[in-house]
Structures are given as structure tokens and as C-alpha cells.
Amino acid sequence: MGFHIVKRDQCSLIRKCFLYVGAVAAALVMGGIVLLCLGVDPIAYYTRMFTMGTIGNRIAYKVFENYLKDFVPLALTAVALSLAFKMRFWNIGGEGQFILGAIAAAFVAFKLGPILPNAVALLCMCLCAMLAAGLYGVFAAALKVRFGTSETLMTLMLNYVALYFLTFIAEAKADWNFFLDPSSVRPVFASFAKIVSFPSILTIGKFSLNICVVFTLVIGVLMFIYQKYTKHGYEIAVVGDSAGTAHYAGMKVNTIVLRTVFLSACLIGLAAAFKVGTSGILSVSITNDVGWTGIIVAWLSQLNTAVIFIVSALICVLHYGSTVAAATFSQVDSSFANMLQGAILFMVLAADFYTRFQIVIDKKGGRSNG
Image 1 (cartoon, rainbow, N blue to C red):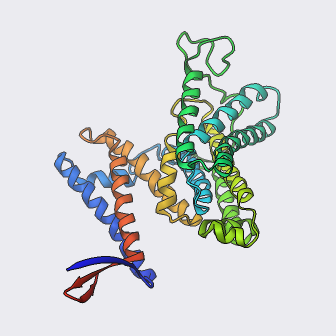
Image 2: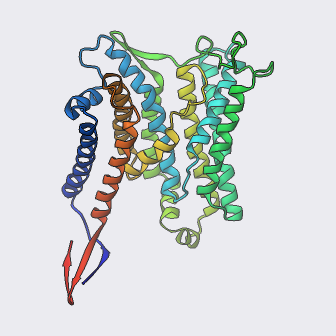
Image 3: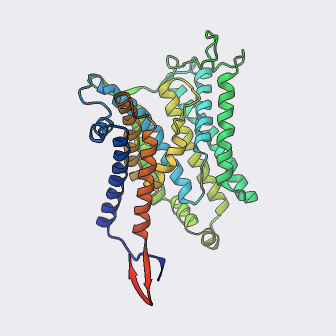
């Protein structure tokens, strides 16, 4: 008796939904077992986590404002990464590109913020962050198309170059380093929140909606249209399916790769500008791991732009809610969210595999499908 794996002809939408929901439920059950082992009531913990502690909270509006500050960079970074992934260019450099974009945005904030109107300074921050991140990303793409280097390894290594550059800035207490607070004896990043910052455009009671949220949603719609209904989007799909076919069709594959990776990195830089322009300060942990989490979000969403926003929202609930729940349940560390996120990813990928393939078992010359 043996078995082999064959591709399924089709899988109904209802069955897919059932499998994916079941996969998430299974991951939550696994997390619940861990919580029970720690002596924590899973229902109480999950209630606290998924509501993010807003029930009975007088400052619940602040919870939503902080939640959106995490949602914006994650959703935009995941959309950006999905562009490159659809072309089968494995851009693992979201962290480094985000860091370069954040540094460029902060540079503009300190240098041009005091002399330019707020709107103009913010526009310059966004453009410079996009350019810095775009060039950093396209550098790896250029090595790929020219020398055939591994983009996975190259973008991964460039993450650490950017991280150590930011660490150097954070620790270099010198006259030239305007990023640091001169009044502090210890090296501490200076705040520019009073110089330039993204405004809120809507106030409901005490809740304020930052304009970056609206920009992110608009960019998501534009990216969906770009990939679905434009020539460039069609070229990305063709190159992703088969670079050889694209060459045969007369497409300039190298140009498409460079253009798409540059756009992908530019969007990550824009996400960094939104993050820095909202928080008003640099930090060594400015990325909040969105470069890594964005990869997970993109794959969980199967590179679908609309689904990316939904998954980003749920992942942010997971992270932010776990931090809130950890403050209530001292037995559970806030990193429980990372474990739960990994379990969800594993189970969803297993469900996705089952929707695409089936296991055929040979029994003494006969076959049985699984």
C-alpha cells in the first residue's frame, strides 16, 4: 500500500470557507489548551483579547485610536509585499525598507518641518520615505536581474544592514546627530510631534480618525484596480505565472521586475512615513515587526488585496488584544499572540493545501481518495 498527492480539479467556495474557519477554530482550541495548562480560563482570556479590553473601559476610544496606528502600517506593508509576491519575487526585506523609509521621513520632519507648512512637510516626508525605501528595494532587484542573485537572501541581509544603521543613529551621541534629544544625557530620540504630524479628519465624541487610515484604504482600492485592470497588473500576473511565457510574449521581464519591486518598496516606505508622522518620533522598534508580519498576512490572504485588509485587522486584534489581556492575566506573556499567530498560519496553510490537493492511497492495486 502506498500513497501519492494529486491536484484537485476544484473545491467549492463553501468547502473552502468551512476549512479555513475550521483551521482558525482548531488553532484557537490549541491556544486554549495552552491557556488551561497555565491555569487561565480560555473563554475569559479570549473575550478580553478579542474585545481589546474595551468592555467597561471609559477610554475605549483611545484603544481604537492606538489599534488603528498598528493597523495602518501592517495593512499597507502587506499590500506592498503582495505585489512582489505575485510576481514570484520573494521580497523578505520589508523590515529594512520600512526602517529606511522611517529614517528618511524623520530626517525631513526635523529639517523641513520647522520651515514648511504642515501639509507640504508631510508630503515631502512621504515622498522621501518612498524614494529611500524604493531605492533600497530596487537595489536587490537590480542584483537579481543582472547577476541572478537570490532575492530572498539579499533582501533578508539588507534588513540587518538597515537595522544596525538605525541602532547606530540611536546610540551615536554627537553634535551632528539631530535625531537625538540634545537635552538628554543618555541617547534618546527627539520628538518632532509638535513640529509636523498627520492630522485627524473626523471626530466622533472623543474619538479622532487619523487621515492616514483614509489614505491607506484609498491606496488599497487603487492597488486592487492596478493589479486587476491595468496593463502593468496583467504583466505582473504573467511574469508570476511564467517568466518564460512573458519573454515569449515580448514583455520586458527585467523592466517589469524592477518597476514592480520599486513600487512595492515605495509603498512600504509610505507606510513608514505614516507610522513616523503619526507617532512623531523614531525608535529602534519603529517597525513593530510589520515587515515580518506583513509576509504572514499576505500569504494568509492568498495575495488578495481586499482580504489583506480583513486579515490585517484580525492580526492587529490578536496582537493588541493579547497585550491588553496579558495585563489582566499575569500568567500569560504578551508573546502568546505570536504563538497563536503561528498556529493559525500553520493550520490555514494545511487547509489551503487540502483545498488544492488530495491524497490518493493505493491499496493492492486499488485507489482510495482522501
